Image (cartoon, rainbow over all chains, first blue to last red):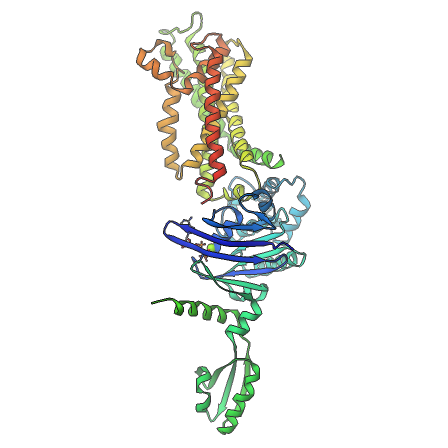
Length: 305
Length: 251
Ligand SMILES: Nc1ncnc2c1ncn2[C@@H]1O[C@H](COP(=O)(O)OP(=O)(O)OP(=O)(O)O)[C@@H](O)[C@H]1O
Ligand SMILES: [Mg+2]
């Protein structure tokens, strides 16, 4: 089966800035994919190359099997992009914008779907208001609506929740999850790693224009972040045998890292041998954020001084 | 087809919604030109035998107003969209570059036509302007507006800031329109200036357009029309190339 997105050997330079270095990515149809990385690592540049807003220096990109340069019309039909920048056309109302946007994609009677989008994005009461008069968060919702107007099989959201309130954030994710459930492929960039962890089944982490990690969210968390346990002891003293596993100690509670939960038995044995009693024990669930920080630091350390 | 029509309609709505500025105000400016120049020169100048100077002036002013507004429409729409960033909605869409080009140019033609026609109809209340050949009037209207519309596309894509576009307009478009024989016939100029005028494409548009009204011209209208069409094709080719390669649009 053709992948939803296929990126091969893509390089991009802006003058002296090497924004993307040899990017290779394949995202299968139906996946909920996360593109993560610190500011300025090339996430938006990569999305813009998919959308045809930026031209790569070498390599190729395909959306639903259509090359974004040679087969641009089909590729753009298949793609809906929510841009990172808050852009809008000040001459029109929300409803006008959505019907114009439908027209660009060759759709004439799109009102039913437009109403549905307006409803799900909680924009119905703003439909006849001029874009200029909307608040920042409202404008962001319209950007999302514009990207969905032609029901694209591949939806790319570049930080869609920046500046959006909690309520809409949840409504937006419910809506996007539903689209994903119905077979749409979703690509998301966000700096909220808890959001990415909850939503994305697979993530790529970018650093300085390179993919430094690419795996399922589960694997990244368990392989890299590892597990940890929190302990309160009596007496309040960690045996020497366990010192090397300690991550932190604060107010009587130790946090120890363990490769996986089967190692807990070893920890307990060591405590018993040292005649230390366990007052309290808690398993800490690792998060994507830990994995992210670790990967970014590891990459930094690998770099030649 | 729906895509092209949507963009065309959007571009028309864009100027129509602020019609006071984009149609009303240039009409008024042109009427003021007519008032002032005819008042000052009416008794001293007669260019075509039996034609009042004011009446002589009207077709040239109609053409000048159309050309300036056709240029202003596509160029200002593009630069605004580029500066505010909402050009991405067109760039993200599956519209072909030919559709984008035609939509912008035809919207420019529409605006030029509205301003020109509006001014012309107002002058008809006060003056009797002959109409010798509707066909030539129509052909020069279409080609002149289309040429300036596509020149506006080129300038709008090329300019990265508002003042770059203003410079293009003030140092290029404006002198060429004023020095094209709107207020006089090139025939009456000293030979150096006359020869220079023959290099100005705007001269052929005015001269051919005027032929449609009075049946008199300095250059045979077929020749003028060929010159204008050649310019149109050249500028269109350039505009299409820019759109196709994404020059200053897709980075
Ligand atoms: N049009 C441009 N001209 C010059 N440099 C650019 C351009 N667009 C991006 N860059 C540079 O390319 C690099 C990658 O930028 P990009 O916007 O892709 O980062 P990002 O990962 O999306 O960051 P953020 O999380 O802040 O959105 C940066 O160094 C940026 O300065
Ligand atoms: Mg970005």
